[in-house]
Length: 136
Length: 136
Length: 136
Length: 136
Image (tube, rainbow over all chains, first blue to last red):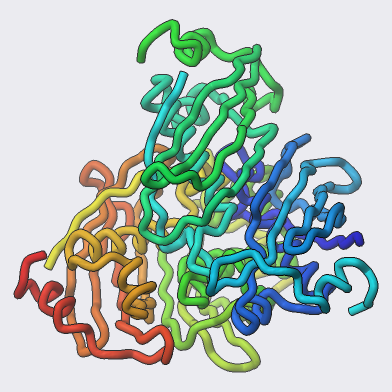
């Protein structure tokens, strides 16, 4: 499954060098994952976290920064599911601008019961959508 | 060379699940690198960026999140130089709390001329300190 | 002149109490001002800051928080110019959700030469657009 | 009651103009309030929010920005209680650097039951400390 969305580089994202401060890329990545859950998997982060009591914390992330991004640019964020475990999901991501690569890497999230703070199996409805078995 | 510092988990660092939102860890990591430059290498980020016109953007970062951190905790951040290239520096880092592992990974930064936006060789004074040849 | 835009409450905006951490509202407000300059005044923040060397730092801001906002909500941000000085601009703003008031206040920005760090008169083209004399 | 603490301007706090992005000042202010609760009032934000289920959201904030702050500076933050209501607390604050004024304003927080999302009377132990009747 592949999902694409866009994020804009805002004033608060850039540093004294005029380029995106790299921790902000992970906020953009998280925003893309939020959009993916909401638009692609049919469950909003609000419903997931606040109603179902389920979170998807990161357990691993890697990133290669190929070129810097500047204020005002719109980045295309592409997420591609590489592996779907019982409770984990490995997502390859890349951010580009007008086709030019900015950064790419992998993010592994884990479906977690927020009260018990324990990994749990993906709810079937979400799993089927990640797998592409059902449409939103 | 090894450098250790501490960061406190602040209200603005935690998410709706009450634990550190992972992009904030990279801000903490950057703060630790700032402290290292200032206290360990003898050059502040302000002098480096604003006076010398030199930046140290990340070109690669990896992170494994072993356990979550909560509001109010003080994390020990340890940086260890693994490899010093002509213009790059590979830093292994870990954050622990009371000895318990929270996250660990690698960060590669590159010494960069901010005007030309090009990698440059580390200034000798900084290189010697990273190498441990001279004390601050 | 009145300008309206929308911002979405993201995971990184909410705190341990599940509601927007108030400093994030000012980032949203700044994003709205960015959109206003770009869409309403015909000059992007990137061109303004990086090309023209002009900034619009805040010199005063006030905010009354009427009700909290939660993850996933989309806020309507309304900006209304109250007073246009030689170099200042007083903007009344409010953020609402589905018509319900969340916060409101005033923001005063000042047109500034970033190199000299001095207030300067608004460039005529921008002044005329703020005044509504010319369309974008 | 007056409380003072310090915050350092970090790389992630400054914008493309090389000065503190004003929303970051409110994070610094919140950090100072955290320190005040912990060091001055004897209750950490973690215990307050996560154990007692009590929050202190802002209901009003004002700020006058007198001069900009740059990367690496250490700011002195001074909080002074102006008025203590049944559930509110009005705090005058200022941030200075080497005695030079940077910003000043007022912050009103309200003691809130996080579950019921309702204002509640300050717990007596906290009220007495804010009032200066008991030492920490």
